[in-house]
Length: 116
Image (tube, rainbow, N blue to C red; front, side, top):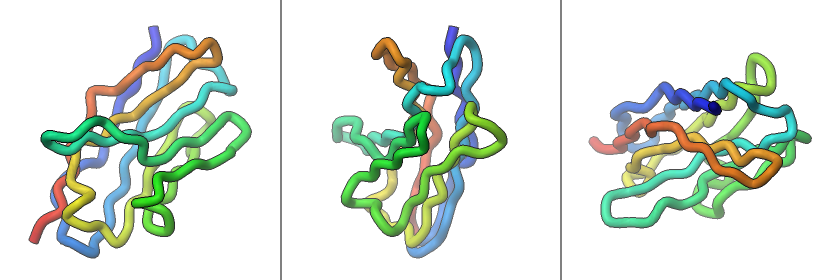
């Protein structure tokens, strides 16, 4: 069973930075697509960034130039480096893995609050 464990959320002031990490385990494949989604109160869950097994990156327009997704410590760990944070970035951030057969797996989420 695939498990995703996130870490690194918290409270940060506008303009600040935060780094999220996600470790995947249990039947994962190097070709799986991994990424981050977020859900703000009252909103639908939305894509933030993804990274493919080949290292192809995809970002939401709202975070381009501010967020960076990468793989660290091997191919089962991804990080999301967030800079120039805005109050609109406040949300619960979820790690996602889409397996090569199209099944989605989710972490429990880590809250990020951007506020002065």
